[in-house]
Image (cartoon, rainbow, N blue to C red; front, side, top):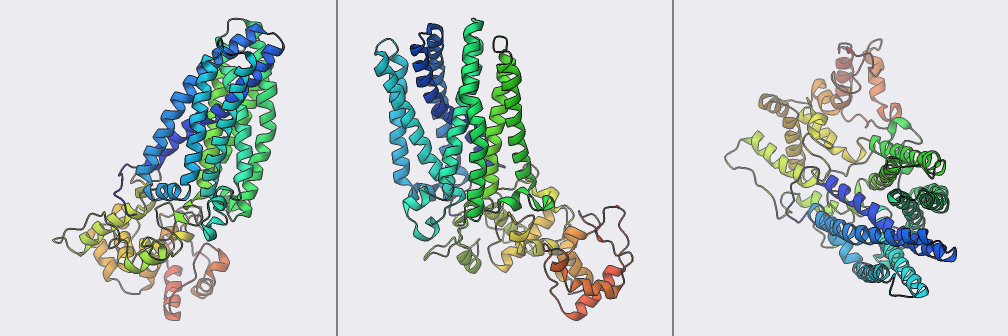
Length: 533
């Protein structure tokens, strides 16, 4: 939080867009390197000059895409993460500085070997040329292995949370299964790319041999291994404390995260579509399949891989580094001298701790000052995920909500909506300021905000603050008291968590509970038929 913010709405989506393209290219860089050397060996062993010519041409496409496209998108990732989440980027650099150095060494070897392989077709003996190809693949896979350690660390840091040791971070609980999954994914992409580039061949017989080889030796074996490795990764994440079943809604479909379910369904659906295209379009008609089928196969593979990466990100929420740093840059452990931990910010306040903030005008009245400071708190704590009206837009979520309801919701952020948001950090004033800003964003008038601040501990005020966000007349689950007496409602108010563990316990005196029960009994029946009884 100690950085000026790059104020671009939905900046995380920019990271996702660049990162998914980079992953689609970089995994091909690994699997494609192995494909080249094994396909070359097969063509030379069988004295198949047409197949060898395809491998030669494929290597030109390979080097151009992986070295140029991969390098550009890789730099793009560094540029965007440094702007969007400098705190997490700083932690990763400082924790894994030698890991990055090793990976860059492998990358330099990878580039050199790729160039020698491309320009050595007519200059090197077949044995030396294939040896260079093996060097390329080894360097590329080792680069993937290092980067996978850092990516899996962000989901499951494991023992690193206590030891802060490099190897505990790299060799974290999901490292091995995820590197196996990425290896299988690289194999599948190698076959998919080859099927695509083979469509430029005019010789139908050669295209058929390449299609059968790519599908049977690369795509189908990966299709068997990849789901098993993915399930292994999810199981390892669950054992490490990531609530995988809860997020995906495996135990309670209604409690799962819609984004996670969408990503999982998209991943499975695209994978099935890719297999159907391989079976029905490539293997069934290897001589006649064309670019439309190959392009659809590429698109399905892209969606499957992108959805898998998106799901990994969703599983990590509300953290950017599991158990250590929330998505807004607030750190969980109270390390000595850390001004940006939960405990330190709750004590000192957010607005007084950060260096980069926009102060409210001194000439503004109380409501305007609260709203201005609340906007700054929103920018610091919430804008890493929420926009105003676009991706995860906050305005539709708080439409019609009162400042009191927002105040109560803010106090329970980390238990709200599937427990995927960080807890609010800051002082009581900052919580009230954020509540005022959100209420104003949702359409509350100045008069309503003033009246809410002046309201006492009445039954209607308690309902407005603590219940209306879910059970108001226009809310998702409008309350329906038909057929229930005030005595019955009073008893229900005493055991709210037993009725639904999402609901917090009633906080108030016995007199207020009785008054609230009578208030609820007198509410008109909601117009919708989906009221929660």
